[in-house]
Image (cartoon, rainbow, N blue to C red; front, top):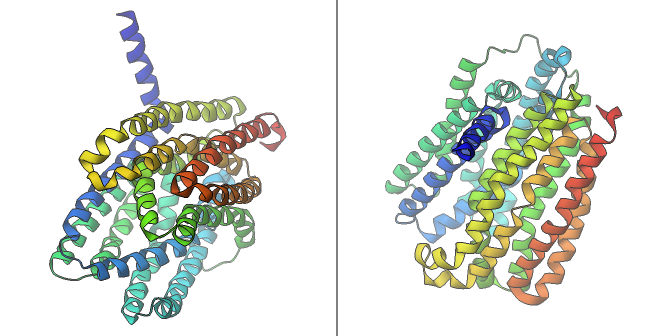
Length: 423
């Protein structure tokens, strides 16, 4: 009975933790997204041709790389900023958002033409251009969203994301049934975007109060250039193994590897993405209180351990049983790939938390240096692993993450908490 009471007390303590609450809301949002996406794949696959899927893949890839340049550090700088400079930074960041997102809209429209030439189809130009319209909708309420994130009110963000995902998935299914082809991937995100404006304007009172200004732009770019570099390197790493497998081994093997990677990391990535979004505001909220700051960081690592380690171990160990049943016999060759990739998920959120720790103390350049080093290590590991086919690549992914990410986490923790002068 005493053991049960202790367990209940421990659970209540964890539920009262702001980071856990934020992570719970974001995780729910991600899980809703994954289930909606799974249902959407089943429906859309019945109505779209392989050619439509090919066009959709091109649109999504172009948009993913364009989205990387959104992370110029505006949101991170505002979350990390001191209270006395917040209003001025928000106003300056608001106008900078418009410049950045409008530029990305134009760039994506221009890129559509060489992409169409590369893939030898003109059918992709208009969908790529139309998908870029979202870039001139998001800045309207992006500052309100950032401030809500800074204030740790992630329930609002999670509910907004979940609602948008439900609306988007429903619209995609309807458009696919109507025979809209690639447009069933392009139009829903644009049609659902105005919902953000309504919700974020309702739940935050901030409004731009001054005219156009470039004040603090230099400071924001100086802070954000490292974050942008980190995101570019992360995007490169996320696609590097696909490029190497497809080029050196073959398309069929790439399909097996791609399935194993996505089936192994799908839900884990949802958890990791939620952790990344929740941890920076959580750390910044206690940055000026040394004891609380340290407690917040190591407490967050403990929460991450409770979540990711059991999940990854269970998913990996049960793969030989659920893969043939859920996905079919043809994916049995991918089981060992899936198991290795599952295990590689364990050290990832700890290293991501260490990266956010460096950003919280205003040292994003150190995080950039680390990502440059790890990208080189990761590339070398993949080129070595390719000698043993896709199983060698998956093993290289696991070893690179299992060896070097914990070393970075330990180094970053020691750097910050052994050098109080940085806070």
